[in-house]
Length: 253
Image (cartoon, rainbow, N blue to C red):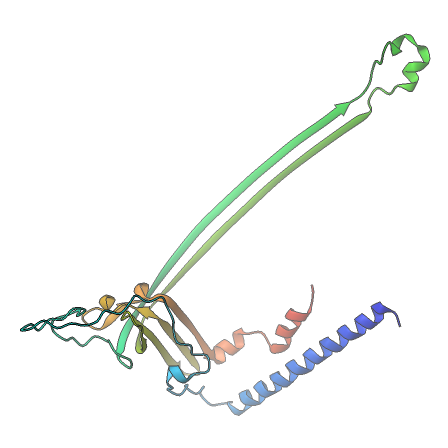
């Protein structure tokens, strides 16, 4: 058996194994879908985000902490942000409202044109009185090298994008960094008939950016992670079948 045949056979075996694995996964998914026929999609349970498998504490460069010192006969101490205590989120477990206001619009259009034309011509028409010799004109060529080249390119590109998302979501403080910044994370699920809309917001906020009504704009969240999507009958119809997705990965054309 040739090396080409062996390689082709191994490739067929690998593709067959992947198809079997995809079929097994698709079978499990199909069983779950069959068990949910006629039922509304279930909402996720409320869990502690710090106990989730993918949760990782945030580590950022922090300044040196300041030691609080009290002055005699004074109600103020250094490091305090307010004289009177307010109801804004400051500790782990506190809630605050994130105002998600995303309005992005981009319109970019570029065009590049380039052209070049070259011509090279070299030869020998007379070499040390060769014209006086009858046979020399037949031996010496008029042109030794003649080269022409022409190149041109025309490229155009355009980008048009417009996104808008305006909503509110309550987030919980999951961590307080040494410099006082808060790590927040919030998740919202809304079920309408047989479709669930999910909104996830996470990031780092400064307590100074939290307004007096305990709200903060999404544009003031550092390392913001905002995800908006859904699941249910509509989303399921919009997704290609798992077999088609496998073929899209495996087929080289």
